Image (cartoon, rainbow, N blue to C red):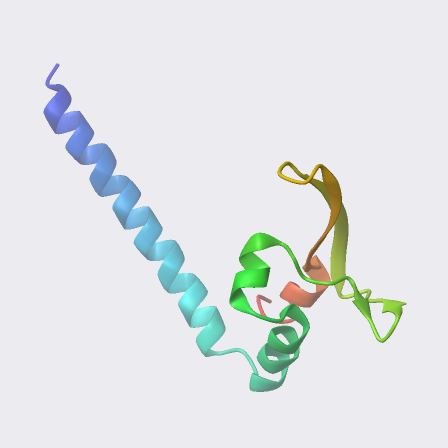
Length: 96
């Protein structure tokens, strides 16, 4: 068995799969309504906070139902840290 050929085929297959999925997501974002996109963007805050899960789960003192909430432990300070992410319902308004 020639492992070089098999590894090239696997890399080619995975690259094609990632390309197709990325294209499908780009098309979904391209054809979504600007209102839904702006609403979700306003809820999520900055791109960095989304990646780190640091979004606040409260809005004007009330629990924001458009975000999932959780807790994590900061290993440097050994304290509980609030974690927030967009809820599935918020994302479904874009990715229907």
